[in-house]
Image 1 (cartoon, one colour):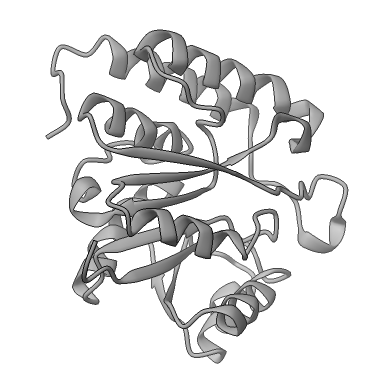
Image 2 (cartoon, rainbow, N blue to C red):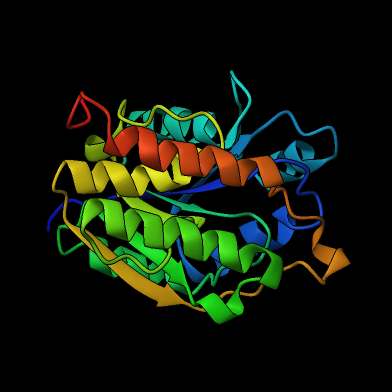
Length: 229
């Protein structure tokens, strides 16, 4: 695939303990454009990112999904064809960016950076397994991690298609690919859960997110609209 240009998105909410590390590590290994989508962090997340010369976009509406939707538009306006999102908490492998990028060059609409079940915090392990199995059963597919926070999108395939505003948008990106018969590639990557590392801040995952994701899976499967528009 020719003419591929990648933008790396760091979605943030109170990540002052991690943002400097993430930006510096990405820059040491790659020359990809980096943007930050911040959910009105009251800490110094935005100030740190701006001090490192990274453009920060304050979300117009709250929520992870809102950040994805706005960032796809921003990435396209910056001249990019693809966007990679990676959680800004030092849990996902920076080296994995190259792995996903190389797959995207082969024409995939979605490259999912999956986590192995044993690497996920025990408390979150069952909900993730449940959501993954539910998607596999209802959509007749085989994905190993539908809730991964590291994915690479072909922008034209996803812009204006994501509807979710919160944590449900993560699984929605998988469902969009399935409903539209997109080319999907999943690559299992190392994952370093931060649940026992106070130096990386607290997880933003809430119990209510699990119910939100479950509702999204069922709603999209039995929606009368069919394919995403």
